[in-house]
Image (cartoon, rainbow, N blue to C red; front, side, top):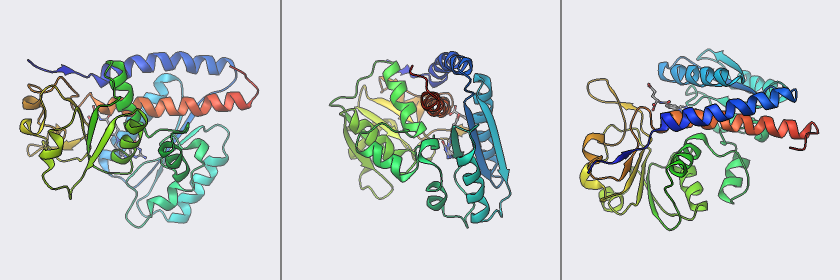
Length: 289
Ligand SMILES: Nc1nc(=O)c2c([nH]1)NC[C@@H]1CN(c3ccc(C(=O)N[C@@H](CCC(=O)O)C(=O)O)cc3)C=[N+]21
């Protein structure tokens, strides 16, 4: 039997309709949610993602500002842009698109973002909050995965979640988030020996590596839930995930496609976090709802 498809596109569309109403409500209270995206350099994939983010926010009625900087922008220039946005009352959320040009230390820039505007959830303070189970901005991809699982009534408590990939933006925070949901979490990465030994034990398998069709059918347990975070290109230049979808779907119970799986959920959660920040601003303004 073939797996059920976890349609990120469908769920993201639904969530965005709900959020549109919330934006309208905020506007009635005199608050226009605002998102700023900074992109340095002209990596074509990064440009495409930034365009998607800005289009999606505008569709909801969120004020969107994209700040494009050249590849040779200095660290000081970038920090001064972040500082300006930290101070700007029209901006609730700041996203610095990664990767940054080689000569800039990403950590140094991320630390300059006000934790209250850090809609990516990448600031060390927010990472600390996530790891101790406090309220915070949860990184968009892990949060998107959680919402997608919840939407399909897939429970996490007591399940063995195996995460392949330990990046700061997906793998690591996804593990912490699902640990907070009472899953048993195993991390695998490029140095893991006998990867299949671990992946075969997963009730929920999350791959966030960026290597086309790394996860084969014989690495997946019967009826597992398979979440594919990969967005890479195969030999023929076609957009492809980490999972050998055509074969794995015959073994899994649920599976995300690429495209239209995790990607659209990531975008939705960026809007969700921006709204969360704007609601806090409304609250600070003296609104009690
Ligand atoms: N500060 C920062 N925050 C990020 O959240 C961030 C980032 N930097 N840098 C790059 C990665 C990548 N990322 C994606 C978001 C959506 C899709 C997406 O919507 N993908 C579509 C396909 C896209 C296509 O057609 O090429 C899909 O899977 O359906 C992909 C990738 C966010 N990132």
